[in-house]
Image 1 (spheres, rainbow, N blue to C red):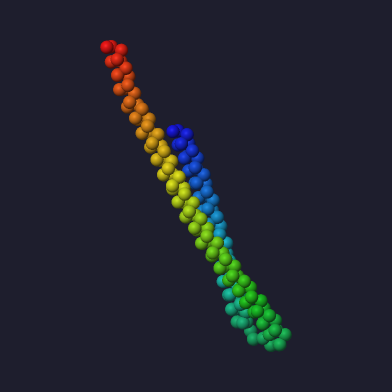
Image 2 (cartoon, helix red, strand yellow):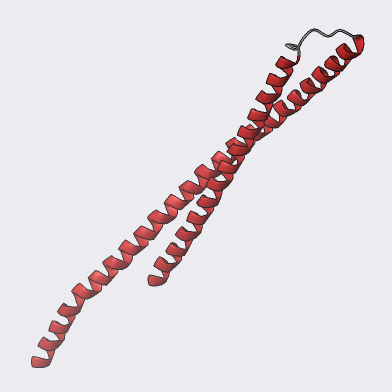
Length: 142
């Protein structure tokens, strides 16, 4: 039975490592989403501040402002798409993290149960040993 305990301990260690990797991946994906959200906010702020500058005097300056505003708007839309994808990855990583945590907890419980079974069997053998020896000794005396 000690092989069973060793196997369950090994599985528990593997599940713990898998959970740690899932947590690290979840944190990495959350940081990535946070960075994209920060960049999108900075882009919105820059676009908003673009027209707070002094009034444009020439048509060329106005065209340049318009072109810059258009590019900032397109970049903002692209970042919105990237942010949506990043949030989906965060949700997926969170699901994987929950799943690996559940697997780790199950492995820990199975390991503890295997230890308890081995201990019960060991105690049963020890409890049975003196009775067997006393019966053997009584048989020799008769």
